[in-house]
Length: 86
Image (cartoon, rainbow, N blue to C red):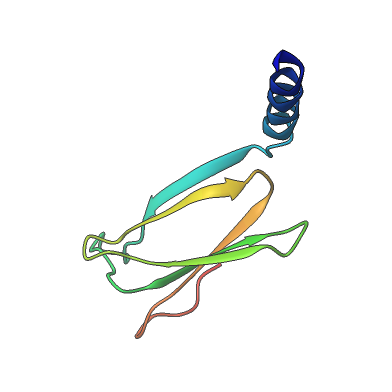
């Protein structure tokens, strides 16, 4: 009985050891007068893998990406009435 439990614990530990590190990114999108830009689309693009994730800014201009694989990213923002920003 103890042997199968020990094997299960070893397999669980091996599975946890293979979890890739992640990060979070939070920001605020504002115009040149420092006014918040709500409902803008913010896109995060990994420069090495092409991984892409999008978010929409809140009424205060904030956006957040969580559980993002670690790497080099480009942040793009687009909102109606504004030029596309990289």
